Length: 131
Picture 1 (cartoon, one colour):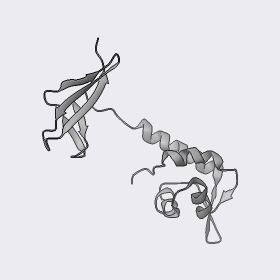
Picture 2 (cartoon, one colour):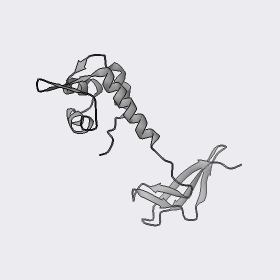
Picture 3 (cartoon, one colour):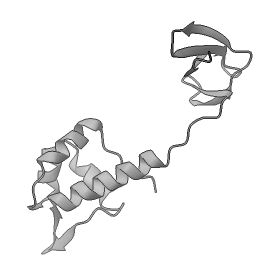
């Protein structure tokens, strides 16, 4: 199962949550997400909650801690692309750079351009400029 995600706007709004119990609809309203997201994504992914009298209650501070831990885990697991490949936005996959050329450079970076071998679209990759 994929890890749940939070948009940046919702991450900023996590600071509004208090040390009190929220119903899923109240929590969704506070951080501006869909109630269905809580039921379909967050609860199956292990969000801390309590079921009492056929209702779900969520502690605000426990949710903030869980959300930040989940997001930090997702960011930590990212790996950079190898040196001679880039992401084609049209094919939506990783493709190799074939005979790339420097299209732009300044004091710090240079942009390598190439043609996607699958779809023929121009693809770019930024890298640190070699002096």
